[in-house]
Length: 209
Length: 209
Figure 1 (cartoon, rainbow over the protein chains, first blue to last red):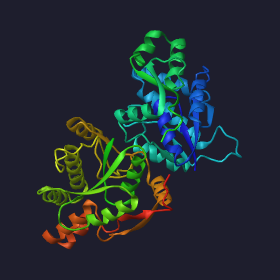
Figure 2 (tube, rainbow over the protein chains, first blue to last red; figure 1 turned 30 degrees about the vertical axis):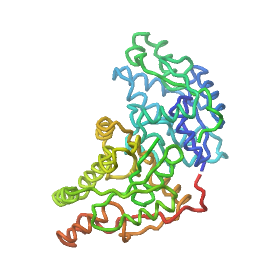
Figure 3 (cartoon, rainbow over the protein chains, first blue to last red; figure 1 turned 60 degrees about the vertical axis):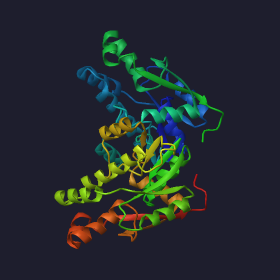
Figure 4 (cartoon, rainbow over the protein chains, first blue to last red; figure 1 turned 90 degrees about the horizontal axis):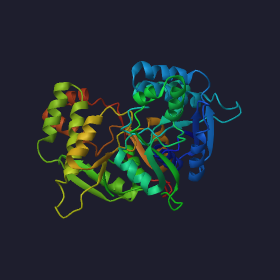
């Protein structure tokens, strides 16, 4: 079954993809707002995982709407949820592919149990599945941080740190957009820099299960 | 890492166990209130999955407390949650093992995304992990019914039906207890018989990933 995994190159989406690749035909998709070439770092991670990868453009309006929401709220949760839901809908709706391409039966991501955002409610999940006729699966939803770190450490060579450069997650480009359209103070208020991010650099030993 | 999976012999706990067995050292545990030998059907399923199995007794008081709750509520959800939490606590606390046995690092079950009960809240999950120093993982929490049916159908020979005899889940013995202490009408009110259950009879082709 053709399966799309929303992929940032971090350890969560990498682990989710590896787990699913044991059961389904996985393709990794990295979204960009078109403000940077950061998606290329996810492309490199995908290559090292040995899984096919595509870049997808959000199209116009999404980053503006999400940023407005974050600034109004003074926290990023709802804005990040909006961006993630748009990404899932674009993939589910195949708006980025030619009509001849086979549709994805399954869409997925690296959402963990302890993630505050992005995180769809059960009602939002069912609505997504019903509207587009897909299965939305989150293999890490029942896993806490400790076990995810254990498994990621077993399978991946991981780089971790605060504000890793060239990150291919949504936050990287949103920070860049905020910096240009608002100021550094706004960026720091919305996205405190103590948050730790990760990038998967490769597979340990070449064998992961 | 030594991992206990609460196991009824149904397709959910079987799939959960098989997924985890790719990463951890899995043991299947079936609880009984001591009212029947139904746990033996789970023992048979475990044998066919090729995974080690133990029967564990709830001890006294649990079925009485749960049944009282179900009758007071006129629905089974809170009572089933109480029973499941007790089972998880017994396993996490190793009350059934000799002090020389190694503790379980991970405890798990077959809870799915669409399950109404048993289902622990995030706060209950964290409380369980903090109190006992274990990881509680639910590999199917991010999976909907359709994908679970797809995977179970791929790997298992499954028997499905309403009110399967000798079921080793909590409901089987609670129905039996209610029938003896109340009446058939009460049983039917609390557990409508249209609910479909499953039992794993074996692995398809002997190879599951």
